[in-house]
Image (tube, rainbow, N blue to C red):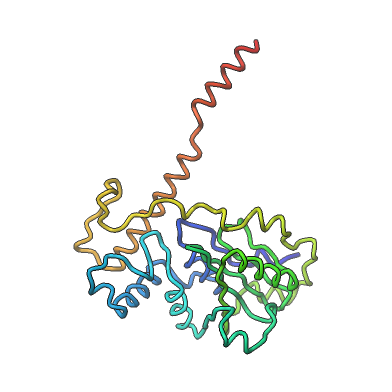
Length: 264
């Protein structure tokens, strides 16, 4: 029996993958989009962005995307740090990939976590675009990390004491998974997050005149309320997009009916 039923795994909602990656890493609902938005807002203030004529932020946007700086600060509050896998501090330690605790990976606007549970042969891909966590053997882990780096992913090593979770406890009691359950190369290529197009939709800025349908009065709203409203709009847009994709093709239905009648 595998430990997957005991793993906390947040699935994709809108473009909130940074939140999903953090909570999957920590195995619980540790951060909300508003929590991360407040960190991003404080960073913007420190960087002087909000005091300039710029209306954009380098640390978050209205779709729910957050920068590596936001993720790093959020984890630092739990005494957890992240370093790029090619940084000198990681290279100097010469630690084998399977001996680390976790990795956070990024390409463009998508973040996801790869995490170990209890032992080095208990690695799981916790990508929010997957239906369930996927086990990676310690051998395949290194191949997987090398592969996604060749594709352009940035990989960050997670160090510090992660909270003990149910999956850690159950991993102590279960035997090593069989290799036949390991994610295959073909499966990986088919589920490559690069092909996931949830981030290709249009994102709306606060007060965007082009977004007449989803507008709101921002004058009397706090920064947290503004961020929460923007994210809610993003999720609503995604739901509407999914609904449109599921609507039947009327031309296709008409064509099939004509074929059926002509065959009689």
